[in-house]
Each structure stands twice: as C-alpha cells, then as structure tokens.
Amino acid sequence: MCGPELPNLTLTDLPGLVRTVGDHEDQSLIPRVRQMVDRYMKQERTVIIAVVPANVDMHNTEILQAAQEADPNGTRTIAVVTKVDLVDAGAELAVHELLLNKKKKMRPGYHAVKCRNQRELAKGTSIDKGLANEMAFFRQHEYWSRLPTHLWGVQRLTERLVSILEDNIRRSLPKVIDEISARMSETQKQLLKLGTPLESPGAQRQQFGKWADQYLRQMEAAIGGHYDLQSPPSKRRRVSENSSLSSSSRGMNTRLRAALRLQEDVLRETIMKAKNELFCNKSQDEVEAGDEVQVNTKVQWYSRCVEKVKGTMIACEELHGSWISKELWRFDERAMLRRFIQANRGDELAIFPSYQVFCNLFRQCVDKWESPTKQLVRTYHDRTKSVSDFVAGTINANARVVRFVNDTATKALDTSIESAEEEMKTLLRAESRSYTQDERLFVELDQRRMRDVQKQIKAAIHTDSNGQVALGDVLNAVASDAIPMRLNDLVLCKFVTEMTNALNGLTDDKLTRLVQDSERKRDERQQLKEELACLASAKNEIEQVC
Image (cartoon, rainbow, N blue to C red; front, side):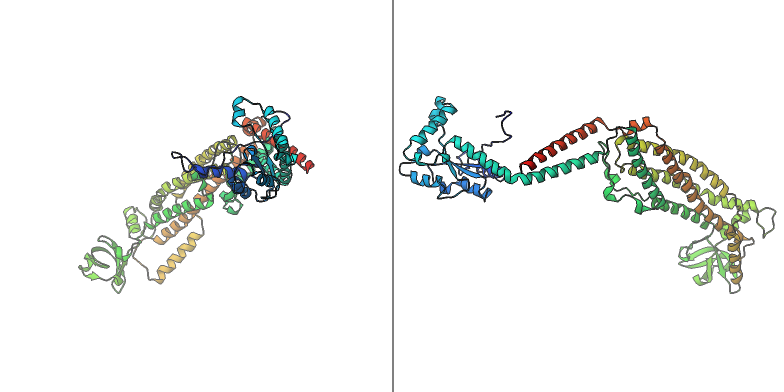
C-alpha cells in the first residue's frame, strides 16, 4: 500500500514455524524457516506480532518462545490470538485469563481477533463486512462479550500497534540520531576525498600547485637521499580515476640515491680492475706455467719464467729445473707493464719512458670504462623514470595530471640523458690523455719511491714505473668521482630544474584541461551534497521530536 498520507512502514508476513515436514520434503526446511524468522525478529526496530490460535495450548507455542528470545524485555511484542470462535466449550476461561494477561504475562499484552474464515473468503466477503461480523461476534458472544473492548477487534488492534510502534520508535530515536550522525560523517569524508571543486582558474592553479609541490619534494628527497622526507608507505596510494597501483609498483624502492650508488660502485670496481690488470694480483696457489715470477737467490730477486708447477712449488728453466718453494719466489707484479713499455719503446732513455707509450697504455684502461659508464647513464635514466612514475601516482591527482607529469618527466629525462651521454664521451676522451696537476700524484710518487728504497728495489725494471702507477692511481680516483658527480648535475639536477619549470609554467587553458573535474566526479559530489542535506534535515526533525 502506498499513499501521501501513509507512513513509511514495512509489513512482513513471515511463514509459520515448521516442526515437521512431509515424506518427500527437505528436512533442512525446519531450521531454515526458524533462521529466517529469527533474523527478522531480532531487529530492534521491528514490532513482533506473534499470531497464535486460541484452540491450542498457547503456553507451549513455539512462536511465543522465539519472540521472548528475540525480545527479552517484551517491549515490542504483542500476541494476537486468533480463532477464538473455535475454542471448545468450557475452555474459554483459560483463554480469557490469558487475554487479561494474568497467566503468561507480556508487557504489551494480548489481543483477540476473529478473521474471515475459509467459507467467508470463498463467498467473497469483503474486509468491511468481515470487520462488521467480527464486531458482532464479540458483542453477542456470551463469553467473549465480557472482555474489555480494547482487547479485541482488528480496529482496536491497529490502535494498539500504532502505540507500540510509536513507543518503540521513541526508544530508538537516540540511536537513530547517532546513526544519522555517523552517516553524515561518512558522507562528509567522501566529499573531502573528492577534493575542492575545481571550477575557477584560481582553484585549479592552487590544486595543481599542491600536486606539483608534493611531486617535486618527493623527487628531491629521493635524489638527495633525504628518505625521512618521503611519504610513509601507508600514504603512498593512487587515487586517480579508474586506476590503482600495480603489484610491482607497491614494492617500488624510491631510495633513488642509494640505488644509483650501487651502480656507481660497479663503475669504480671496473676502473680499479682495469688498472689492476696491468699488474699480477694472483695468489701463489694460482701459479701456472708461463707466469713471470721473481726468485730469491739470497743475493737479490731475479725475474724468471715458470716452466713447471707442483702445488705452490715452481721450476724455472734458468735454474736448471730445480723446485723452488713458495717462500723463495713471488709473482713479478710489473712484468706486464714492463713488457708493454719495452715493446713500444722508442729513442728515449731507459729511465724516461715515452709519454706517448704511457698514453697508449693508459688508454687501454680508459677504453674499458666506456661500457660501465654507458650502463651507469642508462641506470640513471631508468631508475629516475621509475621513481618519477611511482611518485606521480602517489600525489592523489587525477589520471590526466598523472599522465601529464609522466610524459613531461620522460621528455625532461630524454633531454638530460642525451646531453649526459655526449658529456661522458668528452670526459672519457679527456681521461685518456694522461695529464694532471693534482698534488696527490707527487705525494703518491714519493711514497712509492721511498718504499722501494727501503726494500732495496723490488725488481729490476729499467723504467720509472712508480711514476706511471702513481699517475694511474690519481687519474683513476679522479675518474671514479668525476663521472658520478657530472651525471648528478647533468641528469638529476637538470631533471628537477626542467620539471620545476614545466610544472610551474602551465597556462590557464592547459590547467583547465588537466585539472577540471570529470562529469562523473561532479555528479558524485552533487549527489553527496544532496544526501548530506537530507540527513541533516532528518536529524533536525528527530531532535525536535525528542
């Protein structure tokens, strides 16, 4: 039933509780019906109308027991007694006492009705005629006419139900107010998640400025190694429309500086390895036939070539094949360096190797730096792009803004990397020219010469190898520091500058296209506003009633 004057109420006609089923019926029907009935009766805002026939033992009626379990206080349960016209003669007293609430007491009490029987329904007796018949029955019956008039009849039952419902609603109103307040709070939170309406250019620029500032701060923190300034993991989430963080992104390492340091260490190890390959760094357990060694003849150390090997013992052709224990020989650490110089010697004096010879020697080392340097540049690009994409997805911007930031970052990085690659080529070419004014060269050279004097000259190398080794150490140190430092300036610093200029230099038209709310978002905001106004109005009306 519906109408402008009717209350917003629901009448649920539940099935009767089942105690047994037929031969071909499912036994699970019994508990399923009971569970459904209990689910409705346990709702605190439901008035329970427990219908029981008058011609059975109502004390043991299962529905009254179920109602008592669902409503222990009995404030919202009324027992409606039907079929009073079928009560056996002489049994009326027990029913009469029950209706007067003297036997099994209930707070709202009991109510007797006489509904249309099956014969009247078959004859098409109307509701009004049925109500008239019911009134005549109770007034004329020799026994039921003694009942107080407010305890019988459908009309009086309606009045009693309204009263019970009003009392139940009145008791529930404080809780209803709390629920409305909670609903209003949740609606307000949803409105806040949608953000400030971005309708004016000023509001659009202000909101975009917040996103840009958050992105730049996060990137600068990642680049500078200030990880305490990054957003905590619990706040790293994407709230852009129709998008979410992928599983791979959730595990993203945003500590960019630390990640780049690892790849820079690979370059340093390559530089040191290239230098060490000029000298022999093998252990005596790794000696092989053909290795150049120095043998102690109790007078001095002589350079020899290994002919045979037995564990750590060696035999040399120059010493007639006698076995020499590990205590009496050592690797000739500078044999390779000596051979290279001797093979490329010109007209210079023995103690003054050609500058060009040394440049060629050092260039061999520098050539080995090229591949790890290119890999380091690529790592700068890939790592920075990955962190940038991740940070852009955590600034709570819409999908259009996130795409714009990612595209802008790609262009800025490509430009930075292109110039960095050219700079690295120039730097490596410069490194291959063995020239330095670094005072560390002279300090290192003096130290090496003094050690050799103290050891009575380690080997008979007829060149000034100490100067070459010292210069190599100095240039290696310069290169291993200079390349990362230049990349930091050429890639990272330039990237941040380019992104700052790009994000802060947008026109109003571009901002409008990027930042304006989508139609779906505008509709959602309007719906939430209307819902919030409706809840506030309902709360105000209820508070006035209370």
